[in-house]
Length: 243
Length: 51
Length: 145
Image 1: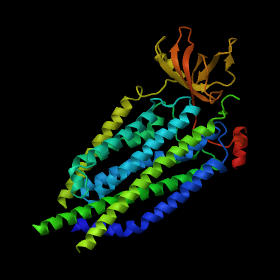
Image 2: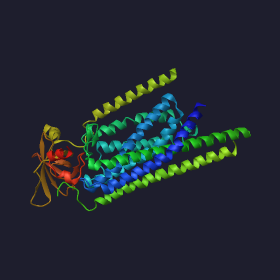
Image 3: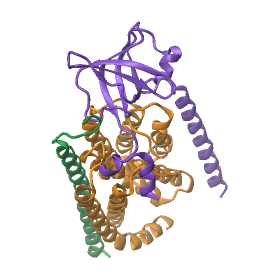
């Protein structure tokens, strides 16, 4: 019964939460995007291309944050066998891969006018590309496997894969410090921000907005999996009754 | 002036980055939404069918 | 309860192992994964003459000299500890300029000049409005309070 009680309680929260995350997220992304495009000045060196920052940084944060949550969900599933953990991990994979791909694409679009190249194999870019492949591997591993048909938990292999893949997250984060790289060092650290306040504030809006949208996508995908599970369970029961 | 990006095509790069972000995010949002609505409708119908 | 603890211990041990292996691999890769070499490393004898490599550093202030042919430029790349003269024939990115970072593909010539066949501009982590970029550093500090 443990397995059913939890999704029900989860749905009681997730159903009302989804439209809020969606609405507020869209609003913040719109406000931050418009501010980043029209209200703030360009950068003293990069000119207008610096505006790509407002979509690039949130996608980097969500690509990496996505895998971190995916790994935590894998751990929770592995150790506590919580039925929602596997469902959450499955729901995170696609939006996580989306934002990782957006991070690579917007970075490349920024790199051409700034560095003079679309792509270079430096530590930051290579490790981010590895993250994209990790997501692709996770989706290939979990999409349509036996565990998905049996309620959406992760197989042990998939959960371990999620955990082992997490080693790449600190590598991405530290890559510009450990190795000489073309990508610049971190602009925002615990010590403060080297992005001037006049250019920084729209980033707060888009970071919050895209994070809320990410949450909304994850909730929607989890609700879909739970609904599919219920349909499968009822069909099984019906089939049993008819026999 | 050296050391500063000054070309007239800067906005094209900005537009490409924003356009791609909007398009892909909207696509995933929309497909996740539609899949959820369909699955929940199916689940709901089945419950009404047979208690 | 016991099985759960066992799994937790197992997961933590496995995680530590993976993290340890990752850190070891990363530190072993330290030199291999570097995208470029610094002038200090070049001065330390890490670059053989004629070997294809990448050099990264700041373009020294006042060092860019355009040659008579109008295409070739010479400048000095520095990292504060050592500096290397660079020669390059071609178009540089907009962002390339003095007191700003660059990365060059090329090779060392016997006379100690680095001959580049491609130059990329490296951006630093600072973002600010144009008016502030023109200000001297101490004025910027004054504006920020």
